[in-house]
Image 1: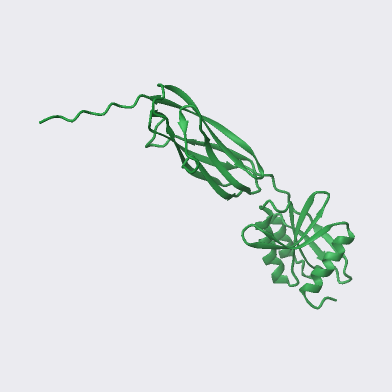
Image 2 (image 1 turned 120 degrees about the horizontal axis):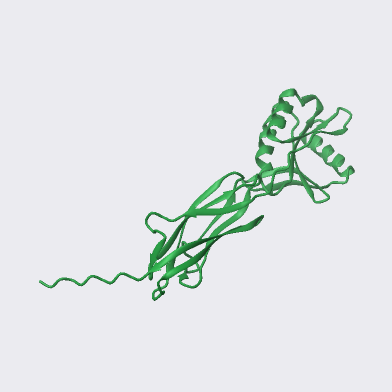
Length: 242
């Protein structure tokens, strides 16, 4: 019925439009990938990879699994001829959480299995004092924190930024080690980075809280307060006279 993959994809698009989906084709996603079709309805974005061969279906199940973790889609499917939806294809798709769309010889589109919907990214910031810079700091010195950012969701967090919220005795220039950025943090992954800011000269001795925060384009902000004790700057040793 279909002479090539392009004709097959065109028919799939018409069938999806008949079901009320708004269609985009060749949609770029992160990692320099493209999704053959993004079908949207009622706020839900279904990414669909189209393949016309048995081997291509298995390859695209693997590709769809990787794209499913990205924020550009809510679900991922692989669409192919019904005759090629073998037990191997079904088992691989079920294991990886990818849905399957089958086209019958008569051109009827069938939703064989549903895609898994992943939990959104959930960021948590923690960490510890650096061995070089302990919990107490000197006025005029440096306060450092070995930050650990966890993504406890399943979707990737995008444009992640972890930073020190400076104020009071703490100060940082606009471009300094008090702030770090990362374009993507996969679900289940963690990011280790050392942050540092200055302690103002003349700061009175005492205990001061320093706020450590993490944000992302598609995740809620998380904050952690770290206590530092500021001590007086040690006096310089006088040189001995011979």
